[in-house]
Image (cartoon, rainbow, N blue to C red; front, side, top):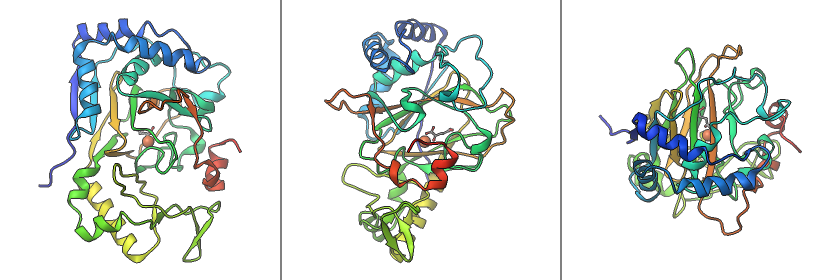
Length: 330
Ligand SMILES: O=C(O)CCC(=O)C(=O)O
Ligand SMILES: [Fe+2]
């Protein structure tokens, strides 16, 4: 059987979980309204994370053969409120749940926290749960299969890592987060397909596209595989027949090598976005306050400019129907 993606797991003992709780308690700033202060506090506090947690996060950052780390047993509040039914940034007030500091300290041990201004009104912590009008959309607020992708593929600034922390699991147990080691998948391809992925022959189909290929409007064709990183989304289209074939081979290799994880409350999955693709299986939300709820944090290498809110350079090329459904700003 083909090897599958290797996931490192760190199960926190009650003592370690309590130590993470004490570390995160230093982060008192509201990430939804005081982003700079939140980042500064999280960075300062992360230095006090217990050694096993700090070491596991550092190993993910530096070891080329590790693409994802699952930390289990994080300290969640006793009471998580009902899962909202509308976008978090549309709620009358964005009161922190008390879990944001945990994400902040874990994330700061891996990279620099940032968010996109066009998404969630620039919230540094993104609350993701199913929303009825997004059912079929390729977004983490949808519930149809969320196909494999690297986060923010082909954006000028894309995350080096991301953290997905579960506040509430899918009560029906169907939703699973998929992760696949890109290097492992590439090693299964023919040399011809691997070489083809380095050519600028891959684009997204969109009515806002500036390029035409086979009569279709597309974004500017790009290589999937670059010197230091691979960027991918299952919705990419090949602009030549050979490119389509290479994409098919890659999708099959991802399918063979991916692992699926049912995130439980208190689990945080830290993913290396340069070395792994991720997605989510389909599930059936109830929209009754009990649905699955994740909080997400995006991280990048120290940027030098210190900005924690950046622009999503892809925003103008999203299909108009996608922008309408997700109510993205113009
Ligand atoms: O819901 C999940 O498990 C994954 C969602 C996702 O891809 C994301 O939030 O970036
Ligand atoms: Fe994602």
